[in-house]
Image 1 (cartoon, rainbow, N blue to C red):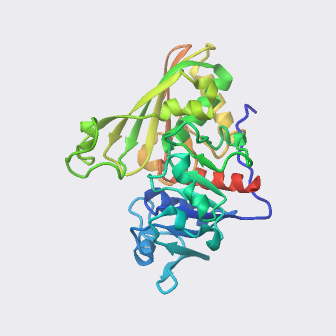
Image 2: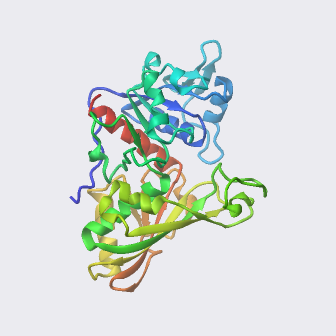
Image 3: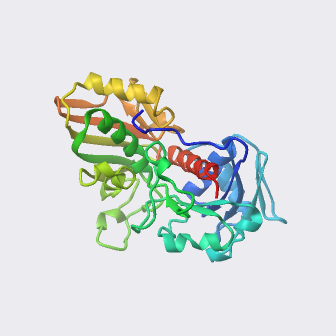
Length: 353
């Protein structure tokens, strides 16, 4: 229904992943893959971290807690051990020289935040990887953007070697936008994401490159207005929205979980109850596992560890007229996104190389 389908999953083979960059998202993608049936991490590369420290960072997490399975390491063989997974750990600066193929990694999650264009991300292919998924919005027009639950079926194994999984906010917004647009039509919309602090921000006031001086203010002490391309990026995965959405962000002093405020003008007059009913239907059927739904009086910390891309808060939205509505939807910008990236890797693997 409405083309919102769950990704295909391999029936016989298990996707073998490599992770480039063992930062916030790299570690959580690794956790998600270790815990998910149908995925396996065989190698990690991070030139700024040794395996001993990597094991510590992987096991202990201030937001998501201690990892649920045993974590250890073998320093002699530079191997990170998480549950039953034995993960070869490299510290190679040049991505072309990481031996992904030798380690058995077919798909590399590029999560350094540096190689976000197709030419640079393709360096992993020279090391033996077959496909690359960028865990960030691509900064070029050539890299295809795939959002699980929206357009993963656009993936073409023959023509696409590097793809982007978009941003956490685009993943939190696009499935809701598609659900609403397919039923009621969206003429235009403004999105605000109230977004948890991230590693790109500063702990105390400092200087930042560029013209956005506010970005250098202390993350823990301020609500910081910021730009975001997440709303416009929806159109990369869902082209009917081109020119209809834009947005901004407020960075707030919480460590995880963000919330989308989508204020939009609808094409078809409706009621808020009808909108609630459609999103609830989506959460139980055609977008199950991608779109969630709640009528509970929840707050941000209630969504730490949420695996859905977005959870519609039925009690938080408001309607002014039959065609003008504000919709509110929560997302764990770390864990939900990491699970979608692993599922995208599973989908890519299922379609062959």
